[in-house]
Image 1: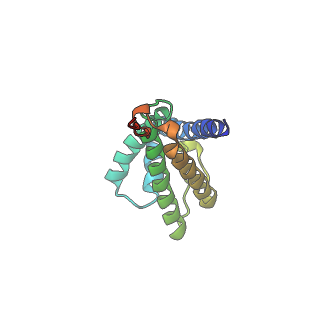
Image 2 (image 1 turned 90 degrees about the vertical axis):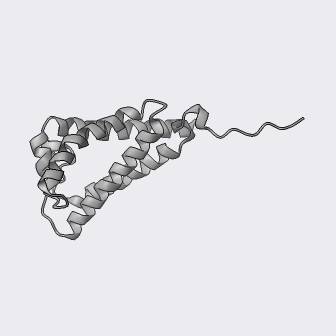
Image 3 (image 1 turned 45 degrees about the vertical axis):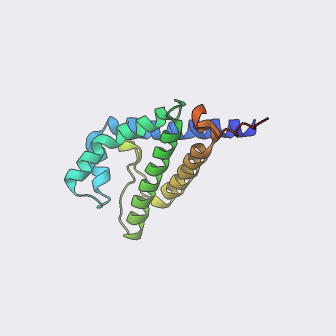
Length: 150
């Protein structure tokens, strides 16, 4: 019972974070482009391509967490996104870039990267929990004990 509650809370949290982040980025594509480009990891054209697709990827991940057949893939996608964001934030911190995170679109003016890094570690942990949870897998993927011969 406790595992179900934890799983539900983590699913709600991940859905909230990725859903809100995707929605806010989708509503402000120009700011999303600038937020991605300021990390200085991608050229302008690649940043523009990522800015166009990232909000949709985040929204698909958020919705997929609630569809049983997509749940494990969505959890894996959330973990991959969290790892990618972690790498970008740690890279910016290591290079002493004075940038805003841009995680939540134009409304995100946080310049302190360390709290965002900690948040991404929590998101990664939640994603891994949900991806490994037996409830994340469709029934046909659940381990089945072999039939015993009588």
